[in-house]
Image (cartoon, rainbow, N blue to C red; front, side):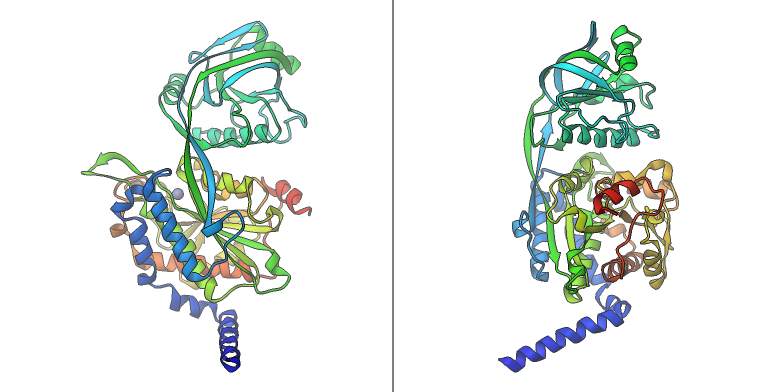
Length: 489
Ligand SMILES: [Zn+2]
């Protein structure tokens, strides 16, 4: 017995040691076409029906990922027994009607305001907070209706307004505000289109821990109630919302851990994440209505699983969390949930490397969204070059891709976070042919490129998990202050 143990310990020790010396050679051996094509084919199969959040097929995908974690011997965390972290989502149906008043002025439902979520009746003090950025928001908003200009000062397009709006709303809820009302000074979309969208569509959102706090959008109005509010920063108001039902959608993130080998660094956690949901069944195109999501994001999920396989053989100095996230396509909901319900302390979480993308049209690069934002840039560039790729920066900053993947929910907590996407030079026809289309199938993937992309991803994570110093935000970055606050730097 004893000698066997000594031998196996010795073998384990030497294999770990050899990976420390020759990670590139080990990655070359481990990351092959057949290793990655199997799981990709499973996750993006027609039988998975596009892995829509709330569907039974996405649960099959979750089981598949969890059983893979089990085979690899990943550690289960408290709060994610059997690797499943329950995520409370609800389908919120459109509101039937309502009334809103600032001082003596009443506003008409649909003509002047719409309800994004929430219900009930409220009377009290409304406060005006400009754009409602973290700096502008007063410390005490408890019980008050927060009124702000929609989006943020620098949000131009609809995506940015949605992102800024969701982020602001989560701060209002965290601060105990009675609700958030945002008004549009200028709109990048016509008001009737906004009304039409919110009046006719259910939305999947995170279930509130407390009461259902209302979130409204309204048009600016040249009336006394609005003027008083803006000038004096407050006014009495009231709000009622009729109807609006919420249906629970049980969902889950799949999370497992590999413990670090260094007695000190093992208390630092690298997160390797990828969303495993997609958009399900949709409009038929070329006789096909299944949106397989091979690129988006079976590809990223397999990237994360491949890294798990590598680290299960060659555990790094730091601990690593592997995370398959749900509800990304509904608004980054799985990562939003995790960031607010973390399983290890956020101030011990040093980095999130997310693997997600829209597809590729440049096979000479891996497009790293947020590459220039953190001190991880050198390691990531080195990892790409080791396998014949270049690390490319975001080619379309105007699309605000950085805040459209799960890395954003880590960044807003201050954790350096970036997204490893496949190579994109522009959002041209080649990308749009597959992006959120039924044509996004495994049969259309270039595995020669994919294998290089995965090798670079695994190696970059190897460098981050073993490096002497945890990466941090570059000076002047939008999230630097949040990072300093989180890590008390
Ligand atoms: Zn995606």
